[in-house]
Length: 241
Image: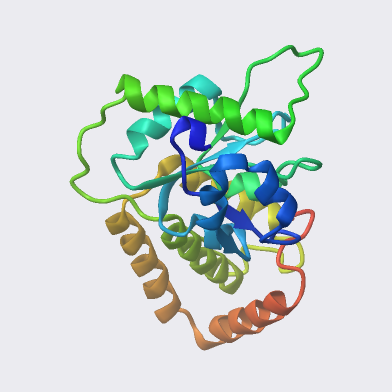
């Protein structure tokens, strides 16, 4: 990271941090570790960002736009004009889960030999970091300034939560298996990259829908929502998929 001019490292739920071995391996980049921010969840780490890239080599059947590492570098350099951006990397052993990928705007991959596509985490970070540096120094991606600022990751996630609550209240979701529909809706919003005003409008629409529901629907929604929050928030199937 430091070699390529990147200094802001966020660690999500690390097994142990600080760690003597990590500091030793960092050599003269231990200042990057010293400034690292430890987060409990991915959403916490992405809060405030307006554009996020999930690094993965696995085909997942998702509907995200897929960019090469070079395209990622150019795109992130341009998106940084609108707010904070982030590259999300998984663990050395498992990579990113489908749920974690779904919380990002696009997928990034490193083109390589399809017969042998294995890269360790450090090598993958180095390749992406290099391409981001090239994107910044080339200045190849220069978007027009936003008239209305983009919604942050946290604002979009709160919209998704509000939408899910209303969908339960109108009996659109199967309370035990909401996963597929909600993943698709989250990916739709990730592709759209809505503005702050657009998110406020959509949440206003949802609030008005709730205000105009008959009491029985509201009570059913509150009951289901409370039950879901205490149980498994994401199931395996959905009756509407």
